[in-house]
Image (cartoon, rainbow, N blue to C red; front, side, top):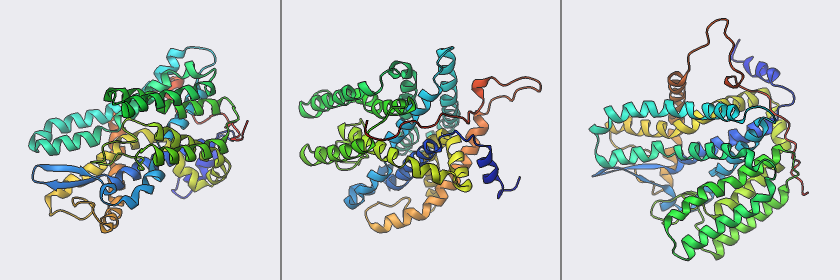
Length: 389
């Protein structure tokens, strides 16, 4: 099979009933996360070692970039749709859950295995500051895996009435914000929002998979208006990602702004369902989308490792612009853009390595592969219309 014929054959092998818009949304979500981290995570060489900086600290004009590249709500929306679509109507819930957890945690175990070796061999040779910085950056994607696994586990609990619990969830996030930020409550209260805030788009995904007629225009306009009001009148940060030195973050833990902006993202995604489906019918586009979906979890886990690997490898030379220098000018942005292809190349190598480490033993000849171990390429049509009910 030639590289030129692969997209056409992959498109021909895709079931006609597969909802390609969901796959495109997942690919866009992973692209937003990766590009966002690669563009706003800067390493600066100091006397005590590497420390993390952000161009958003020095260049507030880049703040709209965080609006475009903060796509976690789309991740959880697509995750809710996929979990609800695969939920067995009859049979073993435990078997379904174990199969889902296997597909979710196998790449993570491979990732942790490699970094366990790196920690034993390399970490003792560097300073404490550099080791701490690297550890925080490379392990930061793990929170998503844990939260996502928890939401998948509760899918049967929200299956019957996913739409009716969204308003109470939003209210719960607001109560925590008032208690934590307005009444100087304990900071640990923010941990509650890690579950409730991301359960909102997840429930919208479940409702969508069930065929609910979601109010796409209402979600988009209401989310935008609510976000603007919260930022303007209630002093929430404008940036949708954490900024070093800013204090309050809309993401860690998620605030009401993260929820309202997530609602707007879901509304926009529903409105774009038709154009995205038509775009994905192009063989080359579909090949890229399908490949990204198959590797989505590994991309999410390894993309920060690619950034760190390039940064550390280049430390043997003089500090390089866009890699080891302070992100305090627009020239730094231009320099960082030149490093993106290098990060991408290293990421591809990390994906291959992670697949090799995490690959299970192949079934012996004559033995069948359990259904849950095979890749499923059929999902129901996206029945939600995205119109006001």
